[in-house]
Image 1: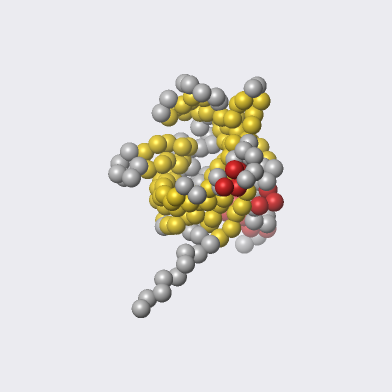
Image 2 (image 1 turned 120 degrees about the horizontal axis):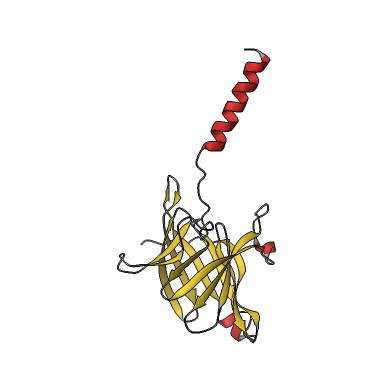
Length: 199
């Protein structure tokens, strides 16, 4: 094969790779064992620490095209509960315990979808932004996420910053003409469930 043929072959390979469909980013936690802790920075101590919420990915079967069903265990001083997410084509939905009804947190195609409405709240993509808490991220992780603003029919507007593979890392609420942090990712790591001792 001559030089011209080699160049044409290389160009064809690059074009074929560029045309392959890319998997959509998952704007939710999905790695099994990933444990995230959140606090409300607007609260004084020790109320802030006592109100800490821990979220652990308990189960996330990996399927071709990315994760789909994700089970999250939430623990706080108030007790423990389980949430189920459905991640599909960039969208994230909260699945009710009956397994039927869903609440769309992010629409399919996110972040290309500019606006949507869910349960009386109008959402819109505000734009990209760098997360100030990037020191918590794994080395080499991109701290750039997507800000989404929610406008309910009643109550203040709020904004949430979503990062790929983590989901919500910071939420702000409009108060007195400014934006006040009300939920912030303060710890990230991996934990295993305690092993069961059998008689």
